[in-house]
Image (cartoon, one colour):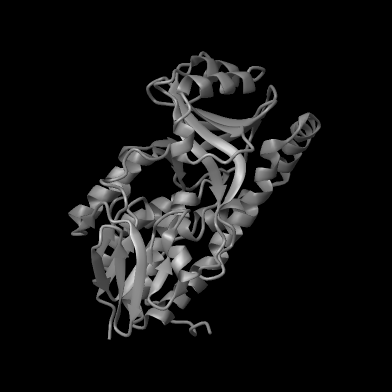
Length: 399
């Protein structure tokens, strides 16, 4: 018997994509979101890689995302006052930088237009599995039943704990994220993003089409602060700390000085997901940040979440047994997402480089970039494409 209905928990990025792809696959999917409405105001800026845009083409929303994004075809590293051009693929679509709330809105609205129902204020508290389906229990006393349940509920996933009570939680990188769009006298060519290793902290910046400069800060901070906790601190206090942290950096000092409390976007703790042993159990499976959330340095977090959501829909379309479909999905996705995570973990170590390490970076990095083969380093990630029309071949169900 084929899979006909699906509950999708979470309305961020992977949830609406999964539900839209499931609808395209002929599966009646409905999204249940804990927030009282579409979560448009959550998060800061993110990048979509060429492979992520290619995946969005499958569900017909890529052009709407490009319309709200800023393309970047060049990247550079700045160590002290030295600018080092980074190698990149030259024959792929540029990285697209987009505000997360804007991306949420586009994906949500496209899902709704595709026939996906959304229900809000539905905080998942439990799941009952039975022979022919799964029932989700919500905090308001309501419930929903379907053939399968998809946990697309983010890095602090409730579904992950239901799939495996011993599953690891997210790892805090001992950094808080901030962003802003502000004015700056520093000359920066359009289409270029700069990753800067400041004297005390890492940051990045880029030119906007309207003449402003966008920038993001990774502020070292031993204490974990959630988004809600970080936003209880007045913006003026965070700006005082950011201005002190980047006071000796160019253009970091000016960017921090020119940013106003109204412009400052507070992101909270920066986290990654360690390897999750179990991606599914019975009629439940995980996707997106609930199982793989690499560092923002990867430029692949959102793209991988989109890919996984679509691959999961393909597997459920072609494989009638949920456990076999989920095992096949994991076999398709785990090597790819964990390969990206491993590559970026090495890069993250440089964000907290001390003064000696920074001096070494300015010497070593140009040599490293000169020797780097962009095709070998970035090709497998950015050239990846999902063949939606190809039948999925099942793998043996894991014991």
